Image (cartoon, rainbow, N blue to C red; front, side):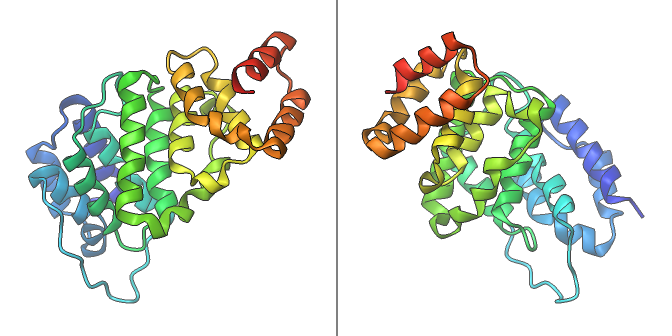
Length: 243
């Protein structure tokens, strides 16, 4: 019997190198326990035949750990080459991928978000025009298909260690997934800082200008900015471009 972590590790290796799963890796899938097969089936079906599985009626006593679900979810961003500087996707494929991820037993949408963020963090994915557009399209597909579950992304606001949070791709992906009504001044400042010297900074700023039309919001933002450890030059720059 194949251990789940060994199988997922081999899947990640295949997807990073070739974007497909090898015959040997698919043989490992057949050797998983019945429970682990159920956990992985929606994603493996999508990767191998681009099909969305039918929903599986799960026995009530089967419970998977969050990290197990996250590890399976990580395969989808790797399929879309999110570990590179040029992710490849289409709206149709992204829509079907989200449908397949939602079929993972017990999955919480924050776990799907964490899977994408972990890939960006592990591979230091750059935020360029391709990644920027991918994040926007990913957010749009979640909004179209699962608007009632968007609140599950709120916890992503505080996700990640200091190193991950300073990656522009991680900061922007979190921004696109976290619901708009959770765009606190503190969160927006935490997003701005990693993006300040990124090629997508100006486009990002244009997208958040409307937030500062609220005078109370602008005041709280400036208070957080003043208390930050940024240099005087960076504080002045942020203040100038956002307000």
